[in-house]
Image 1 (tube, rainbow, N blue to C red):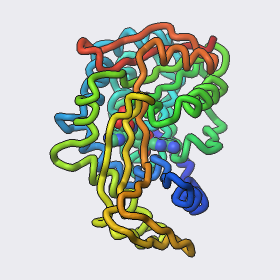
Image 2 (image 1 turned 180 degrees about the vertical axis):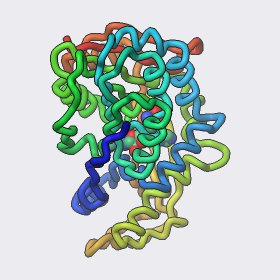
Image 3 (image 1 turned 90 degrees about the vertical axis):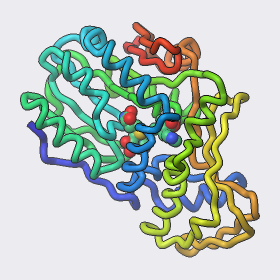
Image 4 (image 1 turned 90 degrees about the horizontal axis):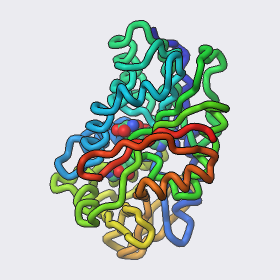
Length: 319
Ligand code: SAH
Ligand code: AVI
């Protein structure tokens, strides 16, 4: 059973031209990573999840498969599940398979086509479940449907280590907002990628087939397609590395020449070797994440990890 009202938002609303121009106008040029996820970008991300080098998806999926019934037991019966950045809605199946009489499932994603397809598949495979997809930018003031079903508990699900794409301070603010959405007694199940051998991280963001490079470069092609920009995409190179000082992988697009680019009425100059910072992916040990979440009003109840200690899935409740 799938609600038909999609809260639809287009690129112009989700990430205004102003936001792009501000990013490209700052001393370290940058673009928000949410811009990766148009239809092409979402397909490229799905390919990334199948790459040998990209361990996080496999590690998290395995944790979910093995731990799904224990996680569902923590949530209890009649919970309303709100998934942030649901993408293909694959991992959530490990929860839906075990939840007792869930009140509903609210997947939220900025990639509207993928969200619709995934919501349809979930509705088909879980016929009694109320599915209420919300398309939009969860970093903006996103409103959930007014007619949310009554539930015993609201549980946010935030898989993929997508929380690592915020700076720690922005992550804290976001966790705070999720605590407000879930309210007293609310829960949060979050996937968090852990610190590890920098070489393994390096490979995960520099795959041999170049899919991550294509994913990164697609952001420029998207600005050309949707904002009428004139980036010469072949004049930029994907550059990703692990920065151990900040415990984050940084993805950049480096200009291969001195060049001018036009975005709307703005002319933007690039020196050869200058970069646009497109994504940060922070890595946390469980205790570091517990401390961060603690500063946002959450208390960790349980942590599941894989046998190689690559990834963690943590269940928290509003303190
Ligand atoms: N949860 C999936 C997908 C992770 S990729 C998994 O674990 O494999 C990150 C997802 O978050 C994408 O589907 C992307 O479209 C979505 N996303 C990224 N930034 C977003 C934002 N600001 N608002 C809403 N969705 C966002
Ligand atoms: C969605 N997010 C957690 C991914 C990550 O690993 O930071 C996006 C990604 N970037 C490059 N590869 C995958």
